[in-house]
Image 1 (cartoon, rainbow, N blue to C red):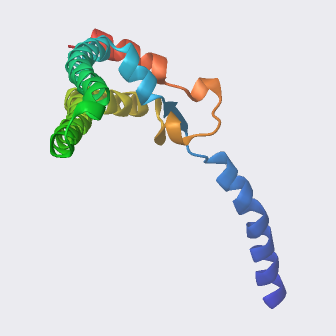
Image 2: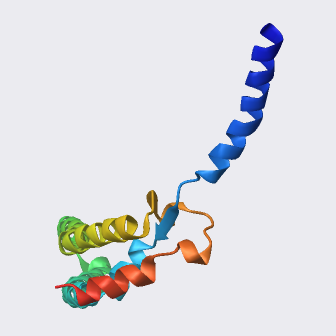
Length: 169
């Protein structure tokens, strides 16, 4: 009886790994960054962000020119200035420099916030479309390509996602 039980367990142990190989999950990969840059809404977001970045850059360049002018003026006139006037001008320059640095950081934060604000609805729509594709094609798992080292090309669903996104309204 014990020998028979051991034999049955041995046979099952041999068969079960083969069975689990038959039931492997179907996995797909989507490059959301590529999709975001390729869909029509993503291209529009990119244009808006580039326009905003250009405006911010112009504002910062104007402040930078003012700083450079003030610095040049300070360096030129420093030998002729009294110590208290020199200190006052140096403090004025430092204050404007700090204001410029704050403006630079604020513009970077604003651009990042705007990118997030404009991109979130697009990503949300892409996730829904990826879920639809997964259900239709029987995928068990869809991964973001950024976290995947290698995937076979037939696992990449990015092109289909882009196509479906652009046709849905």
